[in-house]
Image 1 (cartoon, rainbow, N blue to C red):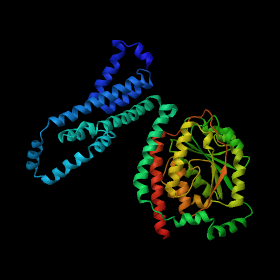
Image 2 (tube, rainbow, N blue to C red):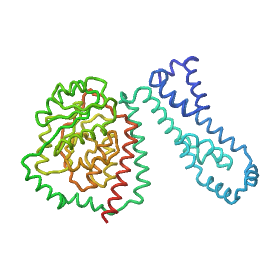
Image 3 (cartoon, helix red, strand yellow):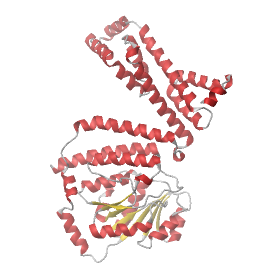
Image 4 (cartoon, rainbow, N blue to C red):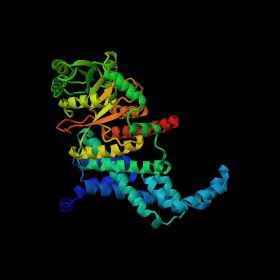
Length: 446
């Protein structure tokens, strides 16, 4: 910013003047364009932000002034012509006077609503000192979010791991959690689900019978299932290590590289899609193949090297000792990159609230899944990464026990295939759906 001030010229100010005028005329599109300009280095962040905020606030005060110049008599005439009950207009007028600050702030969090809101506030002659501070606050928040979105799209969401993305995640998740707390916790059901009580107490009678039956078997057949997409660099090493313990099936989810060939070369069975379908679809394809082949359990892990196949014996030992239907590899969030540590921690808190259980790591893809859990997973319609989250929901709904195994937290130079904003939206949907399903199971149990 100091460099900018020391080198001010007419040419250097011109882009921000144009940005101010563009914001005055059309806000949201200009906000996104400003973020893109910052990403490519054409605009400085702070001057662009100030131009955006002042441009929008100037336009807002113009709309308020337009309302101030209006005459209440006009409303009375229009009301009479449209045969609207005058009492309704009077009630609306009282509400505008009473809730003007909240209305102004909330309207700034939307696109399009600030204009009619400010005109109405001006028409009712609401003093600016009552709401202008919230107007500015709302503008600061909204501009920051829209500029960040523009920055991320221009920079490439898959390759952005800087402070701007952290701010976006924190703002979005904090607002989301605040909304959930307000709308959900006020009417929170204090009764613990019967299924949850049985789960916390341990295995049910039917589970114990199943355990005895399984102990009678001489051997349990297991399969390693890997859903892979463009993992030619690492898939061969992962398969070679994993097949020392169990047979390996790789579902190539429409890779455009040599993933399938490298997997076959390493000794895996391979099932390939021509087009990318999503991790959930790939896992369900592998599950169906495992069921048809008569496997008693599968172990799912990623093909990018983030899951160490040498830890497979830990899952096998836990399965032999406890016979849980779902055993999840628990990672150490403290060893994750900052963005992932924040998202995983908050996601775990949200999901644990949704299912009324403490789930230490709901997004780990390193898992052992029993045959009877595989047999109910076909009910899921999630094609993406959210399938792994729903897997936990179905396990709890059927009162199947869950176990945990500590695993290494590995991050290298691999590129994440998760789209943060899309994944966040889907994760919220899955969590709220999980909440609904668990509540429905309460009613059924009762």
